[in-house]
Image (cartoon, rainbow, N blue to C red):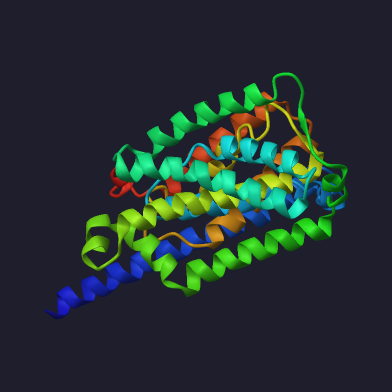
Length: 319
């Protein structure tokens, strides 16, 4: 019995050590990448930090909604289309009222999220299939609505484009998300569903209701991110939100997010990953890399982090 107990303690200590390394690796990677690119660009990374950080607001806000979805074991590839469609509504309604534009953008995002949630929860279609279908569906709608010309917003929309305002909005949204995930039952329910849906159901969690509401919430969050995106350029083209879903997925994986979700998900995955992705992209741009080469490098790094953080035993339960 003593020998068995010692072996179990050793296994637990080893598992704890592995978890600690996985948790600290993204933070170490963020520091390393920042220092590396600052050296390679001759200090321009620090001097142009405001330009790099101007890209992080939309990514971080939208990534938080996808983080909730991935925590419960799902996926969402429709975020770019949600952002583009919501931004069109934001720009259109901004001519009447800015608060109305924000509510309208979030309502459209929530509606698309409800469509995803309905087919995923009620019709029992895998989340990645549903969201890929809606990605193409609403991307086509965006191109139709912007065929003749970009959808321009109110001049007052662009006047709101200030670093202070965007930082404040991002901190409020991320702060509320952190409180909900860490200090309420919301986060516990998501982790429980991701770890084992049947066990979560038997423990009293209304799993179908929770999954549906999380998709609606994620859509609404991306709808607010569309407002932040719209105030930057003041209009929306057919490419609005293009590739956002890829950026979010790479950011979350770079932040150490387990692909299968569950108990190993940490809210810091969203924040650290978004910062790491933006610094990586900005650094490569400052060094003069072409778009194709940047995608190649990002793809290699993405595969490396998937190799490190993917749980081979749980990966088959992605819903």
